[in-house]
Length: 434
Ligand code: B12
Image 1 (cartoon, rainbow, N blue to C red):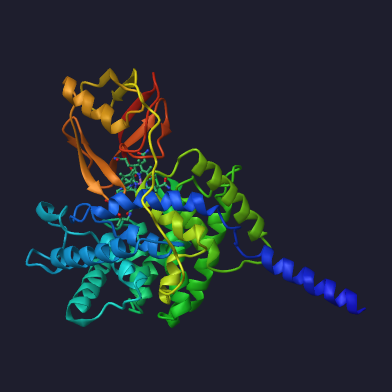
Image 2 (image 1 turned 180 degrees about the horizontal axis):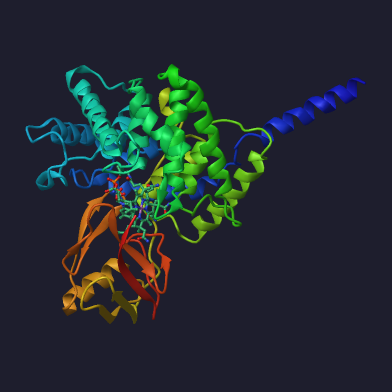
């Protein structure tokens, strides 16, 4: 009888484990390699290059870069405060200084970075930043409108990020602001081009989880609890046969969300281990070169999420990162390949075969095409790298973007700086709505 009791207790324990998204530790060498890719970026200290997501990712990881980390936060403070609180107009939507002024989402990430260093935003300057972020959200709320028919100027991703950032600083936003994100979840509005955006859903889930834990909007508690359940289910349903949630690059945020709490009856442990295996395979294939992506992945590999920034553990032991010795094995000059570049969204349509050295990025292809003549493009710096904003003089308008596709119809999962086309591949740039 006693043995049966022990057995049931053990089985119960195993059951509880299966309901948590706990993934076995990943080889520390692999994690270190990922961290090392962030180091060169931490030496770029101009406003355009600064990336608060890198700082957040590192602080929530198992790695540290002590002196560099401190200097990086210092530069973030200097540049973000200067550009946000400087004399220029403060609404940020004036085209002329839009690029220089951090957006709503960038300001939110900056606040997450402060919290990752166990600081609460405060003082006169801090209060002004908080007010600015709240104003951004109010503007977005207006853009969505009373009838919820409109769209935020930025995206629901940034809307969720901003609520999350204020929440981890224990700053309350009005119920009506939270209400817009709740409505979007309740009515399946978190879509890109008609498809569920797993990153956006995961970000909304992280924001709601923070609100639930901090109890900042008690009047909406029931709706928040239900929305968390909804988004978690959506993320689970997005798992591909390989194991990713959505695609490889939305898996880190999805895991962050699933790690925030247990979920009975869905075999969460098994689901997350499958995702981990898929991520490891992608890591081995070299899929994680982009620093923003690495910054979202490192916390998940360390069993952390942005919600942990409610009360971060700044004394947690982390391994010191040393600069890596990744060397390229290429000794001879690479041979040339040809990439066919196609733009059908303009008149006359453009289609040319562009010779570039093997291993070139799509950005190298665009540069070469421009140099050869007959092709023009422009990019804008973003935290994910160069974002293509204009092709052949045609700039993407409101809710439009220049989509990157592998012909005939497969959207690329990487940007122009990271994607490396193969010999004979056709890449199309297509102006689409989202
Ligand atoms: C919203 C969003 C979009 C919107 C952006 C417009 C808008 N007004 O917000 C739309 C739908 C247009 C879009 C387009 C693309 N996106 Co997108 N996008 C996102 C999302 C959900 C949030 C970005 C964000 O706001 N970040 C927060 C703010 C504070 O950071 P930011 O740098 O200031 O934000 C700007 C950039 O992120 C830029 N942007 C958006 N996507 C991408 C992708 C790349 C590669 C670059 C360089 C820039 C960029 O738009 C943001 C607003 O200005 C992320 C998800 C994630 N996990 O990060 C995916 C994400 C970054 N996108 C991704 C991809 C692949 C693309 C596309 C390349 C898809 C394609 N085949 O064309 C294109 C970009 C093509 C181009 N012209 O260069 C991937 C990138 C993966 C990677 N390896 O780096 C992500 C992670 C989604 C995913 N899981 O696949 N995207």
